[in-house]
Amino acid sequence: MTKYARDEFDRVPETSARQGVHRAVAESRRRSLAPILAAGCVALAIGLVAFLILPKLGFSAGQASAVGENATAAPSATSPASPSPSPTSPEPTATDPGATDPAAAPSATPSIPAAGVDKTQPVTIYNGTATAGLAGRVGGTVSSDGWILGQTGNWGGVPQQTSVIFYSDAEQKGNAEALGTLLGIDTLVESTEFNLPLVVVLGPGFQ
Image 1 (cartoon, rainbow, N blue to C red):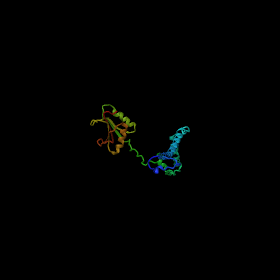
Image 2: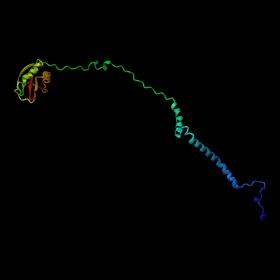
Image 3: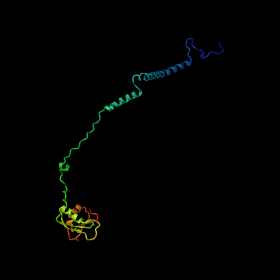
Image 4: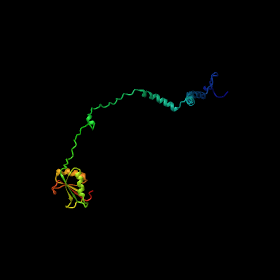
């Protein structure tokens, strides 16, 4: 027995179970950890299933996500598209067969006939070169083409640097051009000096 007086802490029932404060705290901690441990076990089980079983079935994480995307995209793909207006072909326009066929179309500008050539006009030929008999040879060419041959001889005027065809007036220009084409002479000069309709002067270099 102690020499101190008994107080309220000494009044403990004999039949009551002794319980310390530390025991109540431990039990409350165990109760709060139970849901966390259960959730961890469930997550671990799901992870094991996904890691061990799904690969054997031929599924992967990428395939699983692709399946989900296809499932969400399927409704939009199967939704009926709004009908687009079909392009209308242009109506054929009536065309004039004569306008599309160049051979059948009449010529808009009728061909202008070449200037009339009067080969009855006498052609005088002079040789202005040192080649003897050149005027007679050229005269034969002119006669063979149907022209009336006039006088032939040697040129006694101013020496010419090239062959020239003189014609008396505008009416003889077409005849002068025809003679130039026949003889290969490009120089044509209108002149009234000779009092002759057509005069051919053969210059140096004439062949």
